[in-house]
Amino acid sequence: MDEKIIEELKNIVGEEDVSTDPLEIYVHSRDSAPFQGFADVIVRPESTEEVSQILKLANDYKIPVYPRGSGTSICGGPIPVLGGIVLAMYKMNRIIEFDRENLMVTVEPGVICDDLNEFLAPYGYFFPPDPGSSNAATIGGMVGHNAGGMLALKYGTTKDWIQWLEVVLPGGKVIRTGSNTLKSVSDYDLTKLFCASEGTLGVVTKIGMRVAPKPKYYRTVLFYFDDLRKAGNAIVNVRSSGVVPAALEIIDRISMKTAGEYTGMDLPEAEAMLIVQTDGLVEEQVQREIEICFEAAKKAEPIEWMMAETEEERNKAWAARKAAYPALVRTSPATTCMEDMSVPVPKIPDALVKLQKIPERVNNLVSIGIFGHAGDGNLHPTFQYDEREPEQREAFFKALDIMYREIALPMGGTVTGEHGIGLIRAKYLIDEYGAEVVELMKGIKKVFDPNNIMNPDKGKPWGVIEV
Amino acid sequence: MSEVKEFKGLSKEEIKKFEFLSDKYADDTFKCIRCSYCQAKCPSWEEFGWVSHSARGRIQTARGIVEGKLRPSEYMLRAVFTCNMCDYCLLKCPAGLPTTDIIRALKHDLAKQGYYVGVHKKLVERIQKYGNPYGEDPAKRADWMKEE
Image (cartoon, rainbow over all chains, first blue to last red; front, side, top):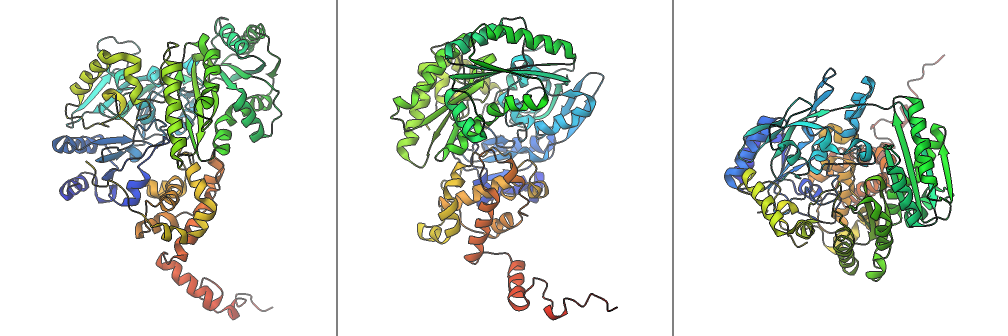
């Protein structure tokens, strides 16, 4: 990159917030996905004005810009594949205002999700989207990928809580979308358009969000099934019971085994484990709701169950689910990739059966464990392999083709429920939507970013990148 | 387009000299899932605000060395040696990686190859000469006690 550009960046943000050191470039070259790309410079802006000046400069010289939070993305979203500027939003991490009367909070994009909830807790409120990475994920990244989590069944995903956004467009213009009102239909809902746009349209610099009353009571019940279809029936029964549980999670046999060995828990031999949790402000209601869920799930003939009566029992019930991912990471030969697909809820058992057979189809060069948010059909098949071995790496990508093209999409599902397109799922976008819809999305991208500087060569909307 | 097409790091022979790191912890650096759990409240991340100066950055630095994509530099030394070994990352790592051991190995191997910050050289010289890092005469170590 021309030294003149680096100097101009230093003039905008100050010398101490610009780095071209190879080490800094290297540690910004990956997220959690198995890809790598090197930027030319890392820049840490502190204000909307600085972001605006950077984007004007980048647009004038047609330099790619990659907004980045904590880099917890697992789709390759923030990887600077074409070089250019990584816009590291670390310093824009202020909680600007909490309007207790309108129940809204305004934050900068670098605020970490758990930090926001720690701030809200004494007031009795919380921001419900809860990705597994909430202790590191930034709100900006959550908006960029429309993060969900275990509570999405009852509370929705990030976009459901965002009221308005301040966004800097390529060229430096600052716009504000949405409003402070609960209802507004006066626009094309640009706020939601930016949610899950993965930094391809502009840079979010302020976020206005609603908050929810923090539940006071929780009830949890755990079921084991000797047949995946019975577990599937239980999910359908609970969902049609009239109660919307806060969480309805599933773990398959392989993940149970790994998690059991890792935690030392003596889990029964079963094909699947389900966890159902209700929450709320009124104890009697929360209790009644879990009883209704319990009766509904029991009709599907679980082989064993445990109603958690105390907090200790509740923690125990969640231990295996929470250990599922770490256990797979620890038993992997080297690389662990958590994938993301969603299918209509009644298709979950079929999807699980087919997913479990994927390793056989790639000569067992990868292993798989599956867990996920059964209540909304979002599964996280997690692959173990060694990316240093070319054969295994090839098998992993073949496994993805099978998973998305032969399982998720034919079942009427989607290639990503909450992780995003990024690099890893880019080539499946056209399979899911077809050329016409992808062309429409390209048109939207061009309106916002005619020079294609924002996070270019990622799936949205350019669709195809060979990786 | 990026001018940094590929990072030229150490040669295979040079990497072998990072023996502690490459013999014991090479696989671990690849197991890191880059989840950033170790980064969020890492004290040196909070102080410096650059990823290289966080636990995540240091595990990646170790990987960069063993995979031959990074070379030691003054900047790397500051990034690595500002770790105060508090074990926060060890407690947070979902992959169960021995994070502080990896960082310790990185520090050890860097120092053994002659890459250490100036103040450490002084400390080593004092320890060799006086048996303590303060450069004080050991014979006077009890002088602070007053006689009855």
